Amino acid sequence: MCTTNQQIQLTFSNGIELFIKREDKLHPIISGNKYRKLKYNIEEAINSNQTTLLTFGGAFSNHILAVAGAGAEFGFKTIGVIRGEELESKIQENPTLAKAQELGMQFYFVSRTAYRDKEEPSFVSHLHEKYGNFYLVPEGGTNNLAIKGCEEILTNADTEYFTHITCAVGTGGTISGLINSSTEKQQIIGFSSLKGAFLSEVIRNFVSKTNWSINDSYHFGGYGKVTDELIQFLNSFYSQTAIPLDPVYTGKMVFGVLDLIEKEYFPENSKILMIHTGGLQGIKGMNFALKNKNKEIIVFDEM
Image 1 (cartoon, rainbow, N blue to C red):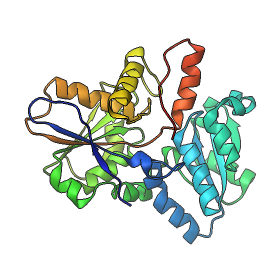
Image 2 (cartoon, rainbow, N blue to C red):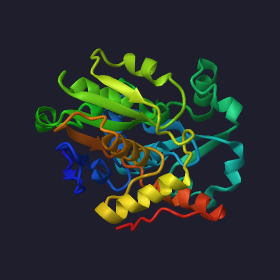
Image 3 (cartoon, one colour):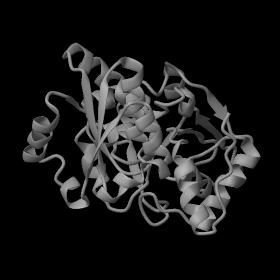
């Protein structure tokens, strides 16, 4: 499935062309990279005769909602192991969890300490005792099948035309797929949405090419953190282009790309393709938090 590359109609020096691939328009619920990551996992679950999908995530997880949506669409029961026991009594206050529940997802709320052990065999055994058989989708959806799906984001035309491909990085799956499907003459730049240099090590497990780098200068304090400057940027970009950006992933990446263009990081006549990985459902939850702090909210007209 191909998505549109939309040119950003802003004026840049040095003959730079900037486009954004609208992966956010792939599916109303399973949007962006989550659609790509789940595609072959769903296929594998069906082929394995599994009837339940189990996965992990936090309070405003795009992935949790995407798995709930995939379950509703393809006929799976879904279970979400959610970080933070305190959220159990606040489901209706949380747009992501409320929507996932509406789509049929059952929740298992665990402490943050227990959540850290979610990949331990003993914890997975506990989940099997509690729920029986299930197809386990890792947190963020990243595994070899997810990367196979993300290798389909770029078209042949994309690999021929663009000199630089940029995307936000969370668990490393999307950028790994982009790297694998890129040509050696292209540069793939990932913008980390969280603190820490461990992402490069994760990505090296999935790729063999070296035409990529991780920029960790635009995480705005860490995963899920925002500043007034970032919110103002998202609203300004939306008013100029009518393209909504989520504040956790794509918004930070686009901010970074435009800042690097201004700083003349990219060579003359570069053709840059930014990947919009979706996540727009998270805006409601972020705006709820911003309102509680009497901060400017993200302007987003849901069509």
